[in-house]
Image (cartoon, rainbow, N blue to C red; front, side, top):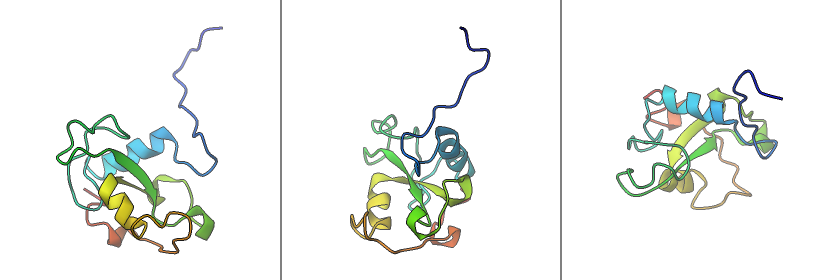
Length: 110
């Protein structure tokens, strides 16, 4: 059976951002890292070779799902790898209780 419309790829984990959500956040940020403002050419590892510092781009929940955050675009920021690491207190991904807001990301709106 042929598909008549392009379907959005589903998130692989229940709390992961959908691809379209990540693209919407990146567009809102005018294709800049929400933290440092470095231009992001592509999500994930795709833009690594063109990135100023050779880093991939990752989606980040400003408010973690475990602390009541959602997987909607308003809670999503796209960060370069270094800024994402910093957002999680130097890699404290599992136990971090930091709750961010758009004001914490200078390039949230580009």
